Length: 473
Image 1 (spheres, helix red, strand yellow):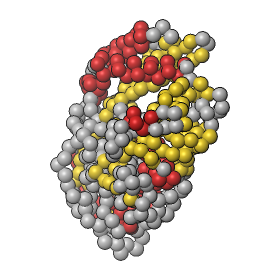
Image 2 (tube, rainbow, N blue to C red; image 1 turned 135 degrees about the horizontal axis):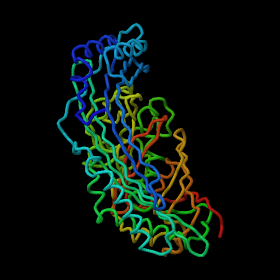
Image 3 (spheres, one colour; image 1 turned 90 degrees about the vertical axis):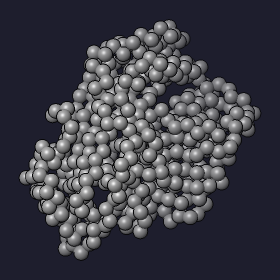
Image 4 (spheres, one colour; image 1 turned 60 degrees about the vertical axis):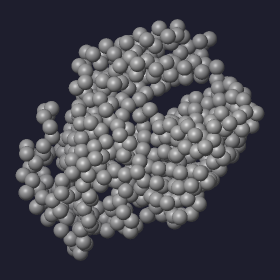
């Protein structure tokens, strides 16, 4: 595989022939497309002073889809050739059956580019990347003698997409991605604790490799680890919780965002199904999914069906006003696509997925929100979480949290988990800060076995009556 631009209709396929095969496959169908992709990625991991892994992956292929009603036929191949395309068309055609469908209107084109098209992997040589990782290791150890282990990962990818529609329209998108993650373990008095920090987005590695960018990440990872050295056992019980701004929006993403994806609502398996136009959250709560923020990890100029990305309002002043839609679910629900048709790769069928999901800022001063917390938890960082889409119930573990009593932030707590359900949590939001932040660019989202990059964000929030799982000190 070469570094030359991905031009499948110049090097692999005759465009006219490919279009005719696609039209034959989608004759009598309501939708369909030929999705072609080339992706290259690399990752280098330094752990405890040694290069643990160094990987480079490259893949290319296509996926052909024919959609009729609720049925979609899909076939994919790593071989981009006329023979493979015709074979895939016969398979996808099986979903059309006797036909009778009318092809849906094609997506409208856009000239908007939300990120550059340079290959982030080309910003530095392999040796320079290794040197930077070693610098991170040395810098972290020099900051504090309690540091006993440092892990740092630099990764980048370059995805090139071509989408051919039965009407003859072509959509292209070039999607760079870069990310840096740092993890620090400290030890004192026989106790070890860990802290992590990362960042990235749809831009080159050059910015992340500058000391003024990665040194704050190292310091923040170390700060979290040191804080956790003094953590006491988390309390357990029902209590009010204040969530910090930025990354804690992952709770919003999981507990609420998935429930607002179109397919779950069309099939009525979401806790929010059938509630359009109703008050589902406290007044002042406005939630957006916005794939149009330049250079953000979750942003896409066009989605994986060719629909332009959009700034979609999901909840406005507490009222449910929209779902995230791909083309199939939008058509079946009688609404417009929202630019949320996403797929992990050419080997996967598109479905409604989030991009950058966040809650807008309110008017409350974050200091006043904390001062109003009489007995609860202040959760600043989150790790893993689980959610049941059908009822919105969630469980999230905190990586950095503090006990708060009578408005005073006290000792850090260890082992805290937040338990609740999205619908109830939305209604029990009691204060919304004026400090909206987006996450630093580290989000990934899984659904039906597919992973895509996403962004999250929120201001400081107070939520009443969450269950905090822990153990009494």
